[in-house]
Length: 455
Image: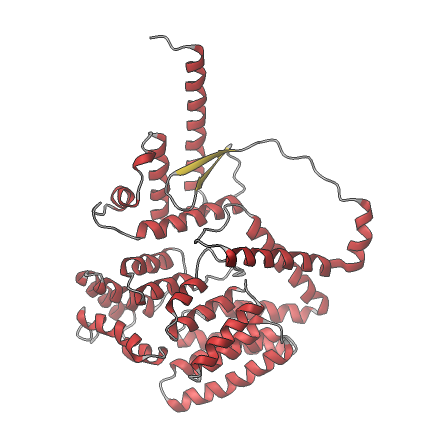
């Protein structure tokens, strides 16, 4: 039967749209943003192809678990929910960083798995010249006025996050990234205006912060401490080196093999934390140092209160949020740890690999969400987050708790081969405020064959 003109036009338009969607899909999948995300590439291709084949109504967590991961459809697997959130963030990263030129943008909205295709207007909006009468104010106030404006926007972003009633993913545009980039640029300008030495010290301290996680790695903590000391030498008036050194030294105190060594590290950490607060009393990072030192000294109630105060001062500082989240875990505030490490929470990581994926895994483990814990540990490994002996330890415990003994034993074998000197029990017992929380992990390791596996 010959198609009517309307039907022909409809079919033609549909074909054009489908071709545009496929072009957008292939561009995203071949981009650097998705280069090391094989599972997310498979996820995105699956949901887009299913939608283009008019099977969007069949997309569900179970169907994706079967179609993408080969899991039993009857086996509820929270890995789909976790990966959906990661995919939304990966798409946001792609569209923010890659400057995609396709005529269609792919979205996967929160609360579902069916992709939405947005047709983009290719006509660029006309440039708007800045009114001439504003130039004088810009010259008078310079970077300060811009920094205050950016700070106001950041504050509104945090307020919005705190007021929301349901978890949400970050906006799928470059707004948050642009605000953070502008703020960091202005901060660097302000540091450089003080002195080049101050900017150099700040840069070195920020690089050292990359080594603060994994926490159980003593060599990383020592290297971070050395870098912070150099930052202090370059500019003794900059607080970042003192605050960072207080964190790394307090961690060394926490994991030190002897009480004598722990006391030595702790004494110096306290001194650095005090100096950081004196130099920058309104910095959340300075007060986070005081909180972390309190935790290493086993002043747990004080540590929790101080870490919350640090976040109130610097609610978007990724370092402050990471230590706040870990403090919540150590002291048994697992729900608070989940909130602190929520991937949807506005944060500025300054290019660091944040620890929140591992925190999500540990918190979910202690709350009894074992499959979800495993999914978060997998996400940390795949996304390049800080991983260590403890990552495998907790993943093995979660696997055993989920009834996957063979998987747990294989993970313990890998742990023994990769870190032959590592013993989970002493570290776990040092970390937790309450012994029963350490025992919750240790019991699952024993059920999986430890310590026979870890000889």
